[in-house]
Image 1: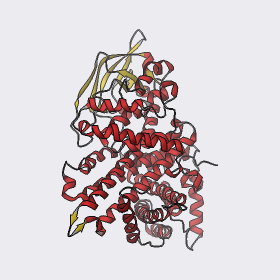
Image 2: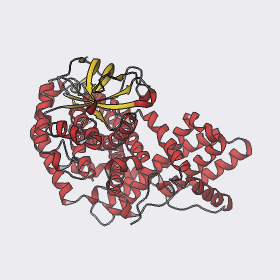
Image 3: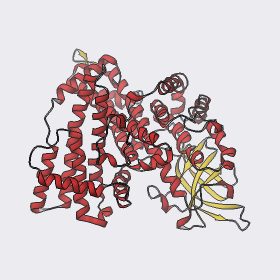
Image 4: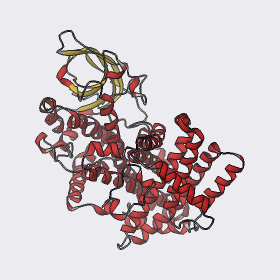
Length: 568
């Protein structure tokens, strides 16, 4: 098998065996799913009200029980107390625990960004000192990167660590904010500039118990109210030199690579939350009586339920496809770096699917959806943070296309050749285009990217709306191909008809987004007769047979109401 490299999906069609999906789960994957489901039912669900009322002790107790099952160290090597399983297993655990935003924040921040920096970059000395205690949740972990004036621009951090005259320790001063788990954290991964120098951005392991470390009051948040979010202050904190994580001046490597993994894992957290809201909405629609019967019989309600399931299918397909690529790469850290573009797509698409699902969930519930006694009200508020977590969706939209261009400049991705080949093909052809809608969406993304680069060249990074438009085209094309391939995998199963309906509707809707986004990019990149020619090419590429999306949604809704939950 010839695995596609990061970003190469734009240039080559993916084969069925190239694309991992839930249909490829092994017996081991299904076993970890069952174990996590049981943990959720027996340990998490009974404590959710306590956690929601900011009983952080209850949250930590649940976290430590999850550690007893190995759920806090799924990918950590056995020698450090972990389960040493694959990335898919970690995604499965995240999906189940994503059903509640507050507990997902506790678990995700601890097992992910709170533990992985040490597991992936720590010296043997640091691992022996801390890693087993993190995996067992004896110590709660947190990740301290964001500052009051350094959010998305992490390298603008002002926290500094000055090497003491004795050379045995650093003296750290500064502050961090929005630190998840801070209220109970014992260990912080802290980023600071050594001697205040811009090129010495460095990561450190800092203990809460050390003199000079102070955790601020709990922030009053819109959502995930059961999680802990505080500022952390460092006042002349003595940090031993052996507590440098990685190398001095290489903190950005840790920060950005851990963010890649975090973006990938946000996908299943969002998918798990979406499935939970869908199930609650189906249940309510069947129970709620209006005009002489359940509201589930109404076309507009059925439309909402079906559309929720369709978008969940797409987010799930994209998340597990990217995870499969990272796993096959053989090294999770390098794999997440190789597929950083796809990790950004997962983050953006899944977080926005969750936002759509919770919004429609509230609408299905009507006035009750606005009441705090109903789960969907909390889910609606909890969802909003995911478009900010792990780099805002705006930053990720800029990064995704920016990374494609950088890979091309480094010779890692044959984008220039791909664009030229496509342009030659488009200029010489006048007949109908490929009937593969997903393939045509990829061509549109390449076409838009090529024209934008020709227009702006090295100034393209300043054209944020153009970059975001290209990302919209490419991200949706990636999702369309993922959905199409997964539909083929389901073709010989009892879910074939539902998968076909989901695929038909999703491809139609996603192509609308691709076409509209491309129109904006083309208009910014060309004018006059050239623009008219380019728009004609776009119309030809976007042309497809109209499917009966209303009928497809009605069939999907019928199956959802019959099963009472997500179908796949």
